[in-house]
Image 1 (cartoon, rainbow, N blue to C red):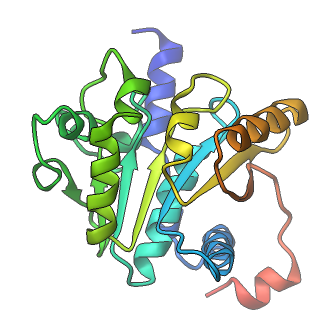
Image 2: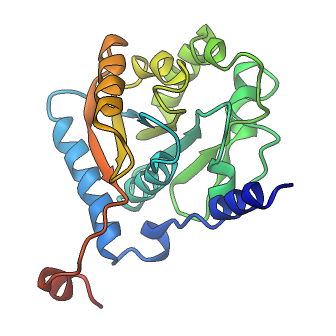
Length: 233
């Protein structure tokens, strides 16, 4: 294994669930702000299933999806985080889980949701890993089995969050977008190109997705007096 690949895997394994490890941090407060904004966007519509994606890779979508799932669970809601990136799954790394069974196992009827999901160490938060990598990810995500699964999950969970591949890389996110109640687009400060973000938004709108908002990730922020007043223990 190359040094670069090994370093990348280690970085994924060490990805911080800051909202769980340090819930009083300013970053955790920002995730709670995202949660509040989503709840306000749901005044006239029920936002129960949320897809998180980005225009390109390594812009922070998986970290955002995981921490959003945590803050909704901390609110007392029953939450399921699904790894919908069937090509390069990472959710099982974040939560230190096996990936032998998961979403692909359920969609191909090799297991049930009850057999495939895993309870996390966070109350009210369950995790459904991606499962084995299939040869036909887009077809699975657009299948009738996926529609049935979505309907069943709505009866069990208050919030279902999907971590999906980048929009510009493959069609998977577009296939899943219009099956969800809303989409959160993650961008990385200093990395995401404006044209790429615009193109991702256009593709999502063409897929009849409801864009809930955009998260600006990885932006350096200087501590302010407001942080010292509200953020410190």
